[in-house]
View 1 (cartoon, rainbow, N blue to C red):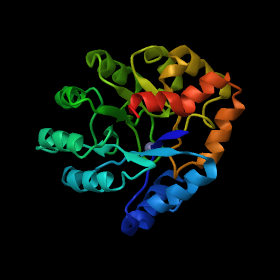
View 2: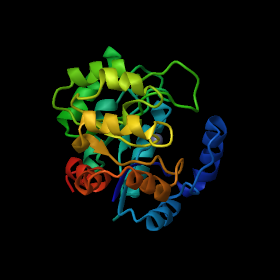
View 3: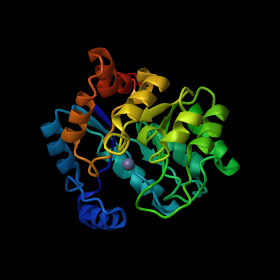
View 4: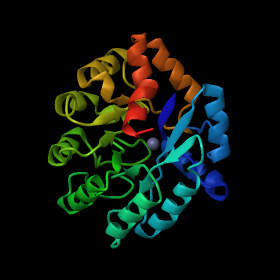
Length: 261
Ligand SMILES: [Zn+2]
């Protein structure tokens, strides 16, 4: 199985980062936030590969976060890179992300303080798509942050329609706690959803309706570890009683195809 959405932190920063994030969201972490802690969790859950999603919350962190992300890509761990849209040298950094062998770029419009459909950011997305990097957005509400929500489904739909042919993933089943709008604006468009933080918040009925409506082949298993337990999240997918083929696609096959593994 492949977990398309996890977070880990450098050993020296992990305890502090988890404490801050946990305090903001009210959610207790399920690993110690290190790469080693993630590996132990993967072993317990039977997950063969996890994809780390780092975020630079300030422009000048971008390079060092990407260097670290590349350094942890060993065997069973892959990573995206990060770009802060206000980094002046974003174009050089995008090329560097590509040459470091990172699989894509994660954006978090709330933490990075921009609206997903801001015209100023479009050239960045376009360049990333040209470089054949996958673009993943935190989508919907972030429970650790106050409003406004910078990546609601209707704004994200505008971006997807503009970036024809780009490989885009919306985390949290298209938009955390905005799922009625996901059904209205995003279901059926040319993008992937990851399942992170969907099950447990979404009613299983609506989860399956979005999954089927959008297309099982465009949904990727993700957990948001350490903010959820990988083994528990696998069990939740198994409880949905999907056809074995569909379950395999969500838990592994779709990610394998998207990541070209
Ligand atoms: Zn996340």
